Image (cartoon, rainbow, N blue to C red):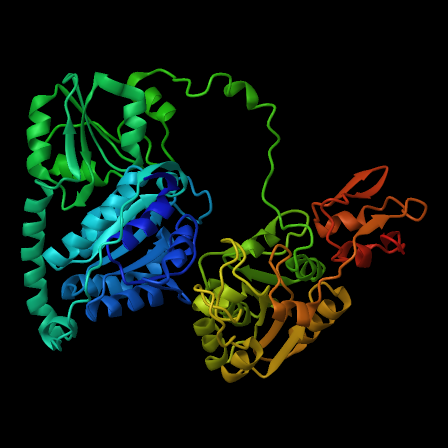
Amino acid sequence: MKKLLTGNEAIARGFYEAGGHVAAAYPGTPSTEILENMEQYKEDVYCEWSPNEKVAMEVAIGASMAGARSLAAMKHVGLNVAADPIMTYAYLGVNGGFVFISADDPGMHSSQNEQDNRYFAKFGKMAMVEPTDSQEAKDYVKEALRVSEEYDVPVLFRVTTRVCHSKTLVELGERTEVAKKPYVKNVGKFLAAPAHAKVLHVTLEERLAKLEEYSNNSPLNTVEWNDKKIGIITSGISYQYAKEVFGDSASYLKIGFTNPLPFGMIEDFAKEVETLYVIEELEPYMEEQIKARGIKCTGKELIPNVGELNPDIIAKALLGKEIKTIEGLDALDDAIIKRPPTLCAGCPHRGLFYSLSKIKNVMVTGDIGCYTLGFTQPLNSMDTCVCMGGSISTGHGAAKAFKLAGEDKKVVSVIGDSTFFHTGMNSLVDVVYNKGNTVTVILDNRITGMTGHQENPGTGYTLMGDKTIAIDIPNLVKALGVEDIQVVNPLNLKETDAALKKALEFDGPSVVITRWPCVLKKFSQEDKTEFGCELKKFKVNEDKCKSCKLCLKSGCPALSFDKFAKIDPDMCVGCSVCAQVCPFEAIERVGE
């Protein structure tokens, strides 16, 4: 049976069909849907949201050591967090097959950088595969697990945003039950003491030599002979782009097993074609290695290494012409209204950022999440954002620097609940231990918001839908050594203002927890009991409105202005922030 699947859906299906046992991840675009779709196979596959990518990687590694086929999934920057365990596991080798997904984001659709994680495979001396569509995404997972077990090596499964989110037809198969391999205690293999690792490094180099031999004969690496005037070496989604541009006017070496590269195939292919191009997205990963072998080719001299590729970029770079993928599309450029991202109408973070926007002489260090948008107009309430969990640490460092310079400037660090569990806790420990003097605001919206409402340790539910212990953030913060802790409703501006004022006046580490569910969240029974769900919409009384536009400073997308302030009744959810901002009581509840 064939079914239309995204690449992420196909990866989950491939792991299920391959007899996979354990899967773990931390949600991050474009990889999130892999584990979301794995949940449907929970009768056969144990799957979990882990607090961060490092933990997810270690959970999957532990399962692999115990003999289970395992998988860890993350977006590209998540692999930075998980690099510590995987770089060593490459030395150790596997027991049960082990695959980890790196979902790269060329073009930075939802990321702070566009690093090319193919280099991790070469750097870490691991096998790597790259599918070009959903069918290959499913099939390659099976082959990756087989290769992992046969060659005793972790496999980096590299996909990009287009492969993750595009849909193609996939031929579904049945699950093949694979028995868990027996676990046998073997400290020489699985305990990375220096004496063991010295031996294991030699073994790893021997594995790589065998893997290159496999690469030259792998079913994942194929040649398509057409016109030999142009030869193209490519991988991943770039193969689809190249085919769209050149069609049958070029021959292709499509490399699906990309570390080690199949240099025998590459050399033979290069001899057969007149002009050789290497088409790959982002960095010249393959091109550098091919040129190092003395093979003449053209790649990044013409094709940019910045941003996401597409057929038009390739056509302009290599053929000097444009192609029209959709007739008339260019004419829409001026007609399409630019819609920058913004906090949703009714977002509980808006009240906090509005309160912060009124405070002067303060640096606000931010973090990764929906709330990063606190930096945008008109709130202007965030100054920095580096990485997951970084707001508290960078804020601590900034505060120490201000103190050394004798500057009277306070620092507020803003972090989400899921991000706090991810890596923020360690940072808060650092602030307490090293006698910091910052305000940490934990935005507890009761869910992992930015990536589409995944459960986290604070929600009380697991990925598989099981009810579990909800980690109590105030008690956790107290256990970490913070003495000044306040919990507020961020939609109550007076309460929020007072909490921030008190925290900023406190001498030492202070934490404010804003607790209110994401406006888009499906309320759990616990949410309904604690927060209720009977918010009423608001309207503008034009007889009272003085056209001062102060309400617009809340940045709510439901608000607009035309002689008087206006509220879109279809967008308003009744959060009341604008009503509290209005000095003339011109914003009233509907029906009152």
